[in-house]
Image 1 (cartoon, each protein chain N blue to C red):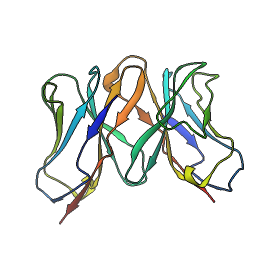
Image 2 (image 1 turned 45 degrees about the vertical axis):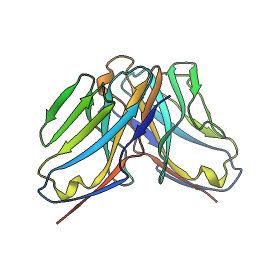
Image 3 (image 1 turned 135 degrees about the vertical axis):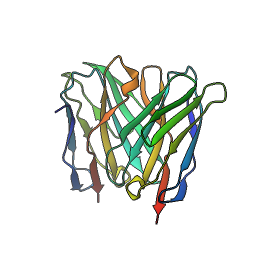
Image 4 (image 1 turned 120 degrees about the vertical axis):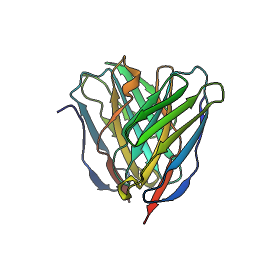
Length: 109
Length: 114
């Protein structure tokens, strides 16, 4: 089975950089996803990593280390609208994505 | 517009009264899935389907039924709802290939069972 761990809550200041970590254990690795979810809304896709290293996409970057079972999402130049939950997820064979419980990020002025 | 459509968005019902939450996608996706989301527990899989007439249980299937008679539709059925099924429900779909696109989610259905 899968086991995914991420911090429950984080707080950061507008304009700053924040790193949200995710550790996972999975039988058979098929990549790792990050989703953003605003309160009461559907999750939306942010990134997908299948190879080790950093993938940059605008203000958001995602890093993966398969040997360590570790990923992080890096958010730069934080804006108030970045206040949301960030979900780490891994596929498992033919089953749907398995999600971590999410990290609730609060951006303060 | 490519999307997953769930209905209704909000529903309040009474214990034991059968209900169906509909889900439809227009992207010709093969995979479809239902999740429920509860505070502190995150998104948990209820049922999923890899193709027409193929369905499997997820992590929390008790009290739910699904069917996949057509590729585009994947309704979630609660035969006898109970208050512990009060939750936020999401339907999602994904192409068979192209894992890097992950899942597209519907807007969610907030269900309250009293």
